[in-house]
Image 1 (cartoon, one colour):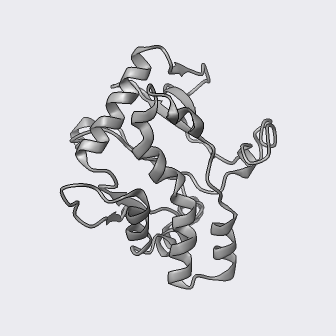
Image 2: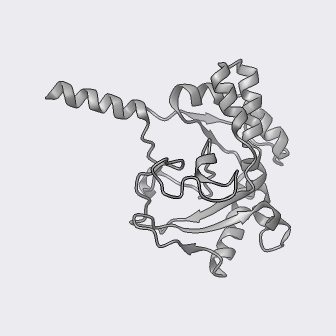
Length: 211
C-alpha cells in the first residue's frame, strides 16, 4: 500500500523541547498507524538547523575515522554505535537533539497508546519497549549502496540471544530511524523498503491464483 506520511505541526522559530515534540507526535496517533500499517512516518521531526547540526557532527566523526564498515555481506553502510553517555563528550554532543527524540520514542508510544485506548495486547507491546542505551549512526555511500532485506529481531540469527539483556537482538521491539539528509527528492534515489507479513501473504495468494 501507499506510505502515509504523518506531518508534525509547523515549526516555530525555535524547536520545542524533545518532551513537547514527543507529546505532539503522540497526539498524531502513531499507535493506530503501527497497528494498522506496521509503520508510521513523521515528517519534520527536527528543524533544518537542528538536522544540519547533527549531520555536521556525524560527518566530523566519520572524517575522524570513528565510523567503519562492518564487513558484512550485503551491507554497505559505515556505522558507529553511540552510547548515550558519550554525548557528554564535545565530539559527540552535536548528536544530542537526535538522541533525545529517539530515546524518547518508547515513552511516546506508551502515551499515544493510552490516548488511543489501544487493545491490551498492543498496549503491552508498547510498554515492553524501553529507552535504548545505544544508538547507531549509519551512512550509506552516495550510489549503489544498500542493505539486503533483513529482520532487526530475527530468531534465525545465531546471535539472536547473545549479549547483555536489553541490548540483544531478541530484545528489540521497534526500529526507529531518523534521516538526516537535506532536500532529498525521489530523483536522488535511495529508499527504505518495508516487507510486511501481510504483503508477503497477498503476494503468495496472487501467485497461487495465477498458478
